[in-house]
Length: 140
Length: 365
Image (cartoon, rainbow over all chains, first blue to last red; front, side, top):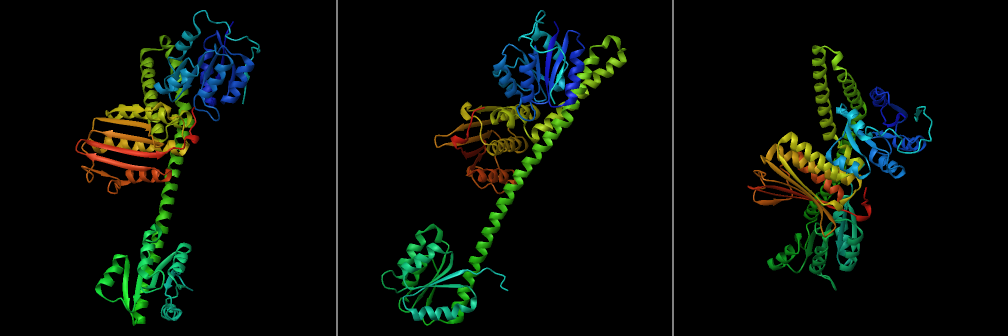
């Protein structure tokens, strides 16, 4: 089964670039995209992704608060904070709310390897029961 | 039409005839004349009205002029009121000295020369009017200064947000595209791979520059997760850029503060570290933020530099000769009801800002 990604970022350009990067791996698919935290949480509940790529600074809920709520819903789903503001202190706050990894948007090169490590070589099973369809959902 | 605002002149005498005489003499000043027939009545007027000049008889039954002057001076609000004594009997130098020691500005003997009395009262009425105008201008200036600081903060926040939302995603997309290309290096010739490598470095540099500008304008962590992480992140970046070693000691129980308090404290720390780098010559700096037992938030920034000219060996609270930086800090603190203290000597400078913090306004993230 393919690994299903939920992308939450307020920039359409970033979401598009992430799609290109992630879909280069035939085992990975984007199951949903959201432009802010609230819509991200809705899609998270609805689509049960295997992994979430989450922006930090967004209108409304920021990435830390969004991750906190997602972790309460399904703590096993890995969340990657994808941000322009990566720092040791932000990483500390991110870990406290269940974020597994913080990746700098300005040096996204290691992201793919880091996601592979997070998912593990055999971890392609959904972390939560897959009740959503396989088609991609867009929350705008 | 009268251009100047009228001021109040209080005339105190137990004899109604004298009050009428004073009224006739001072009438052409076009000020507001108030009559009181006893010390008690005079105090009532003083408490209710802003009085510029008190003209009073020394000899009055019950409360005499000297006793009334003592009572007036005890009240902090009336310490600047000009008191002119008029007396027909107490005319020795001792009497005059007594009056001046009680803060009188003049002591006039009867018989009165109307032109002289009018001229003297006019001087003090004008002085009061000018003082009042100056106080009003001062208040306006402070309010303008506070508005300018708030607008500057807002403008910086907006530009930082524009950089984040406009240029940030472009850099992120460039970085991701380069990453995709880098995975295909085997298909590229060595020259193309070299150019790609250079592009990567350029993107990284562009990103670093943009991030520094954006963070100096407005720290993103400040709004999102609070003052302490924002200060830590700023201190890390400052240490990297300036080679000044910064120790940060932040009391973890501070939590979130109202946004205007957080931005003001952040700007004060930012200004202090900039001063350490530009003026002190110190290779180290220390930031300490903690609660004091008297419910203040204490923010201290120390260095081991050469000290500030003009404050060496002394504790300075004015700092008026140290440019816009310190006056800006002071204005921010005044808005929050806080204080600024600077201790500077040959072994370094410590800036201490104290801000009252209402515990009920504080929430944890």
